Amino acid sequence: MSEDPRLHPHRDKIKAAIMDDLVRSLIEIEARFDQEVSPGADQVNRGAAERRAAGLSLGVVIEALRLMDVPSRPIERLFEALMQIEESGKRAAMFDKARAAHRPHDSTSLLILKGTVVAIAESLREAEPALTIAAADKWAAAVLKSTGRTALTKVSARTVRNWRSTFSGQYGEPGPAADAYRGVITYLRNSPTGGTITRDILREALILKALALPENPLF
Image 1 (cartoon, rainbow, N blue to C red):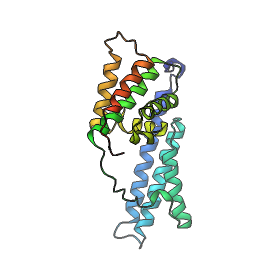
Image 2 (tube, rainbow, N blue to C red):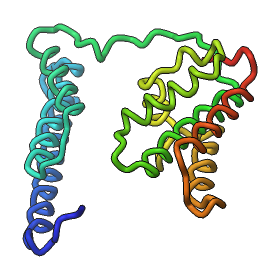
Image 3 (spheres, one colour):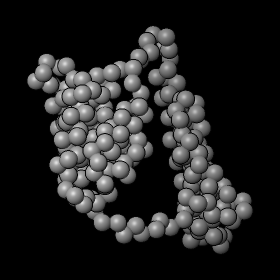
Image 4 (tube, rainbow, N blue to C red):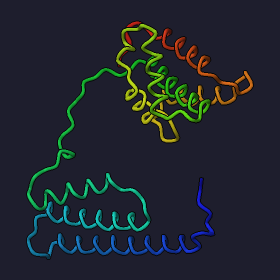
């Protein structure tokens, strides 16, 4: 439930002031960096100058987010990683080169199944409001395993959660999975049964979709 804006009449002004300070600080950091690496400046290590500027920029962004009570742990970890290089020369794991997976692309039928699974799990939560996201994911994984399909025994609640973060919502990765997710969730929300969606109906739909998957899909 959103808060009543009347409880915080000056919140927008405070946020605007914080953003103004942030912009000014970033402009000052940029100008200082340009001076450090300008042709007429003393010899500098450009990489070190860039890290300092990046660290200072991240620092003021983190402080602005803190003042606005916005979580920023990933940005804080990036800041800490930069400071670690500056202070000890040790590179954090986040800067390690990613290994090439050489994993084949998922088939269209598998992508459609993934989007369908996420949509059905979310529909279960809508049908049973007391159910948690984790419980719905666990249920969906169990239904897939119950089909006896060898490939589907690999699916866990974490697998379903990863599919959700990749394919669902406004910023889901475009493609067959996201299309299937939107299509199924829209259909179920406008169910021809009059909106009465039960666990049994969802289980049957999920099993039918899983059994339609080819014998050797790529996970």
